[in-house]
Amino acid sequence: MTKMKITPVRWIRGEYTPPGDKSISHRLAILGSLAHGVTRIHHYCPGEDFRSTLQCLKTLCVPIRVSRDTVEIHGQGLYTYRDTGDVLDAGNSGTTIRLLAGVMAGQPFTSCLTGDDSLRNRPMRRIIYPLSLMGAQVEARKGNYPPLIIRGGPLRPIRYVLPVASAQVKSAILLAGLFARGVTEVVEPVSSRNHTEYLLQAYGARISVEDGLIRIEGGHSLRAFGDYVVPGDVSSAAYFLVAAVLLPGSDLIIRNVNLNETRTGILDVIQRMGGRVEVLERRRVRGEWVGDIRVRSSSLRGTRIARDMIGRVIDELPLVALLGSQAEGVTVVRNAKELRVKETDRIAAIVQNCRALGIAIEEKPDGFVVEGPQRIRGGTVRSFGDHRMVMTFSVAGLISEEGVEIENSEVVGISYPSFFEDLHRLVEPA
Ligand code: S3P
Image (cartoon, rainbow, N blue to C red):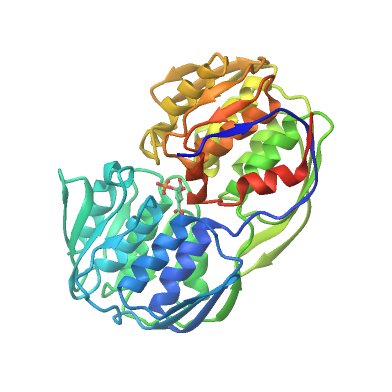
């Protein structure tokens, strides 16, 4: 167990390029493994979660070559996974287990998917139910938790209205839809990240997206398109962005970051709070907006996060607690009970860690309320085994009076192994 001490700094300045997007990396590897031809994933996500996806695909005997900058996937078609009888271990990764469950539902053999302590306590009924409607037989511990035993086979299309806004659930159904005879329809009352849809289009799937209705026709093969350079992960960049907003005298350029609007809620939240963030330049790559942004320190005012904004900022809500603690007035996050079923119960973890540092915050069943500005004294916080807690409370350490010690900080490697090195390169010690 590694303990990391983050000491106060003066500012963060310079140019920064975030690591490759985790959500896009997972999807490229999975779709690449099902397509005909080679997919070369450049600037892939360096985190352990993506390694877990690759490991599962290797267990299914998909030919994969990994070098420092590129992962090469040699896909051979929809039905070319081998039934080795080995368990598919998704580690800590919800995206891996839920997306792969959709694929395994269409395979003509039985598979077993599991993960670490955290993942084995995350709800799976949300995918089990629609996949069962499609004809897969899925068993789970207590009907809801991994391990999952999936008896795959021929699937039938469904029309499914998503009861929770979840890109993982949506993607599991769309991937299963590739194996169904006919048109599978997913209705999304509130939009969630749409990388699966863009990539299915790029791989030549028969898919259409219109006003919250996604239709995919199964039974057709996918074609690989060769090279894909993964844009920087805005969820990783967010820690640097918030550090720059909060540290007086900061001025940071963030290069080559994903600006897909289903992901950029944190930019809008910062702007609404009065923060100075500008998009300098953007271009479109296979559906995804990618660009450079500039962020400077600013004084902030509190805000209420609108219900339809939650999905666009879901993984950055721990940072919103920190922003709120430094803003003038009240910041309210409600309608976010999904946070309770992430890598840890993130509402409880945020509240406990904030209080450990001397930040007053009110816990709600579906969010939190924080009033600022408050001094952050410093102290020791827990990681709760959650990479996003480590990174959020590292930013708290930068703006604190006495520094923040983070227990079990190595879990940062789940999404961002070089987080501390990248941070140290850009900050000016106090
Ligand atoms: C993800 C979707 C989100 C997000 C997670 C990654 C994805 O989860 O919180 O970090 O890559 O599809 P939900 O789909 O459960 O909202």
